[in-house]
Amino acid sequence: MYKLRVSIPASRRVSVLSLSVAVALFLVTPATRPQDQSQQTQTGTQQQTQQPSDVGPAAGGPAGDTGAIAVPKKAPSNVAPAPAAPPRPEFKNPPGTPNYSIQLQVPEVLVNVGVILQKTGQFVPGLQPDNFRVYENGVQQKIIGFKRVQAPITALLLCEFASRGYFTFSFNIDMLNTAWAFAQQLRPQDYVALMTFDLNPHILLDFTQNKQEVQQAINNLANQVYMPAAFQETNLFDALYNALDRLSRIQGQKYIILIASGVDSMSKLTFDQIYKRVKDSRNVTIFSIATGGLFLALTEGQPGMGAAMRDMTYLQAENEMRAFSTATGGQYFQPRFQGELPDDVSAINAMIRSKYQIVYQPSDAKQDGTYRKLRVELVDPEGQPLRFQDKKHHPLKYELIYRDGYSAKPEVE
Image (tube, rainbow, N blue to C red; front, side):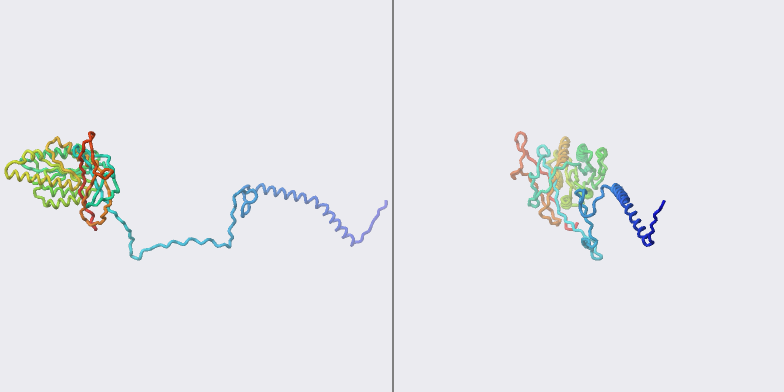
């Protein structure tokens, strides 16, 4: 067997080897590229699967399926921020100067008005602010507040308890019966105190809401009615001044139930002095009930100088007690029989517990300490005087109960 052998020079062998390598690479490359693409595609699919579904597009606004929510662009780093608001300047007081506050006080006047039928002593309900006219020193005032008041009371029983010799029994029994009748109509929320006076005032019971304590204090006085451990003198003016001074320390509306003959023996104060003190008192109303009415009615007008002087003394005492009540918006009673006491005390309770409260700002706002006269009228819608009638169309007379004036605050108080 013959073999053909071709000899190739050495320079040509390198060229043939290079060509063989190139052919081998050409044949291998097509088979490798699809595999690499398949791997890249698989890897990209895995990365897309692992990427969260809620990742939005790049900043700059909605794109693709991100929806209608726009993603704001980031502010460029070279843009300066908006300037801040300038700080508010703080005011500081000069060194050593304290803080000051300005207060403006507008004076207001409160007037309690009771509307009572003269025949029955009943309180008249149902009145409106337009039915009232208030005058201060003759000048009509504008009403800014109005309501009907029915509240518990704070009352002081100021009772004359002295030794009058032959007449002791008549006056002291009247006083005890009147005080007992008033105690019977007390309510659980009422505050009541008991003070007696002869030459000096005596506090028997401080303010309490215990009705039994009030009755017990009255019973203790009743045990001494025939032989009272008391002086014959009755210094009414001094005792009333002492009562007003004590009540001035209590807030709110107060009442004095003065049960006495009204005779003043030897007080240090004169009538003019105590009357001025009564008028200047604030939030105090005095109701006066005279004692010894039956005795005075039986002995009035007897012959003799002594009897005439006695009649003048008790007439003056009656006028003084009436003046105290009128000046403070109260009322004066002079019962003769014990059977009149329940009605008189009921009338006092009605006036105390049921009344109209009127508030106004005085047109004269000066704080000069002067005394201002008050006058209250009732009018109908047409401005005419208000009239009342009973069921049979008979006219009914009524009475307005209110204090006749007040003292304005002084400039410095």
